[in-house]
Amino acid sequence: MERKTTRPRLVQAMIDIWALPDLRRKILFTIGILVVFRFMTHVPLPGVDIAKLQEYFGTSPLFGMLDLFTGGAMENFSVAALGVYPYITASIIMQLLVPVIPRLQAISQEGELGQQKINRITHIATIPLAALQGYAIIALLRSQGVTQEIVPLTMVSILITMIASTMFLVWLGELITERGVGNGISIIIFAGIVTDIPRIVGTGIIAAVGGNPGGLIAYVILSLAMIVLIVIFVEAHRRIPVQYARSTFRSGRMYRQSGSTYIPLRVNTAGMIPLIFAIALMQLPGTIATYFMNPTGQDPNFWNTIYNMFQSGAVPYQLLYFALVVGFTLFYTMVIFEQMNLPQTLQRQGGFIPGVRPGKATVDYLNRIIRRITFGGAFFLAIVAILPFIAQKTTGVNLVIQSTAMLIAVGVALDTMKQLEAQLTMRRYEGFLK
Image (tube, rainbow, N blue to C red; front, top):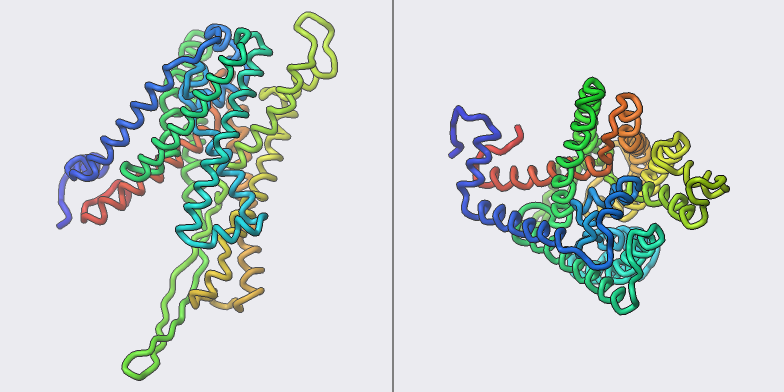
């Protein structure tokens, strides 16, 4: 029976979750895994000047963003400095390669067994990617004078430790998915973002209280507006009506059955992947320029100009960033849509879109719809990407919380709430949402 109570809906939902032994066990298990993750972020690796490292992170947008995602693990140069991002990179590469390589495409169509094989390949690809990313980070920090000279044996031990920590975090994330609440990899990234946001906000508040309290208030309002926009667009989708007609043979007679449903096509199918692609590409020229530019105090050369152009505060950087996000969103959404193979799935299941012929007409209709709504999602992502820079320029408050981090945090929070909502609904409890 559904419980009637005068308590607020959210409060009652939290009480109901805690009252259910299996849900309580899953939540406690998830919290325990996150505690282990937070301990790992405070175990340092050798050979780094922490003071210089923190100073460098304060001037590097790319490393500042990566540090935000790892919850301070990279700024402390801990064993968890890479986080789960080599695995995320491997997953993105596999998503792009599956529709291109026939062998991988055939494996992906083998159902659950095929998905397990794809996951195994992704895990194997994570190891060399973690080694490459770890070595690139150490080499870049060494070129900036942040790390000491590291002998080859120490370098090998550091890289092995970073690879093992990444794979351990991936395993912890899979444990959360299996025994806890939510998607484990996403929860670990979410934990890293959430634990570092209070420090960033506190630093901005301390800096603004004495000089620009009005700007701080305006920045908070713009940030809240960004969160509202993210929630609206993450949940927005276009419903495509579908009719099903099936024939069944019973008692010597043929019966035709029909039903209707819809295909929910999300406006933001690509999620935060285009933002990650665009940020990585935008940081590449500036990173390369640091190896060839003249030191401060000398006459600037070509590479000094390139370095200045690709800083986050520069207008050319923001315009190119906007264009790249739009382009990557359109490209990645079409790749995902091709993998879904909706027209053939509908045909196999006896479904059709009312008023549209099966076959090529259905393909053209769905492609036209997905392109139309993807343009809206692409411009939304691009606006979200540059909105923190606009907020900083208009308010004068140096408190740029990465839009990618906010998008991930809001998306993971919504997905986790939906899972808890489903668990409560199955047990005839009221959930968080109406």
